[in-house]
Length: 225
Image 1 (tube, rainbow, N blue to C red):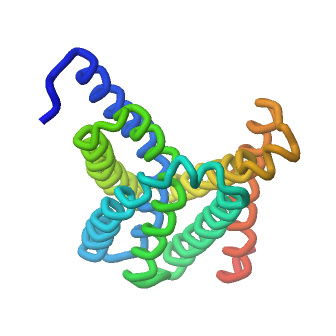
Image 2: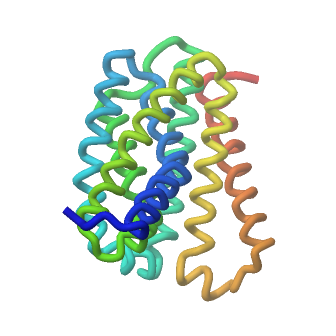
């Protein structure tokens, strides 16, 4: 057990705050992934996705800093988030229009795992930096992030059931996350040297692209005017 000190308390509180701030994006994609499942499958999907995410996050911790600097990796991850956001948006819209489940339980779990791995590197790096090599503190931070995500995604999925517009807002948020990953990729950032204003503009554009693509595909699939 690490010796209790004021600095340890500050580190613990910092990790809790980091987890709270960074859990939102992951919760959005999980809530969208399980939205079209039955209530029983929804609980199981969130549970399985969260459990495997714990293992993946611990494994990624040891290479997270290097991953952030790997050329093209964040670019590919951002494009992957775009695809997941549009797919989940069109699935949810089809489910609402046709009253059927748009994708299977295991495909929902797969979306959760891919998105969690893709979007969690920043979270892992922030927690690892705060823990300063303290393995117990590191495990505390990574473990705490999971219940935060599970609770938030469960709440969001219920809100999405009641207010379908939240699905579109969630897709826009994922579009922003994907665009942020792309613009901060070492290759892209080195080529463009974007200003803070340009980075914000790219994030807004990413959100709009996902919503527009989702709306277009939904119209094509459902025959809506």
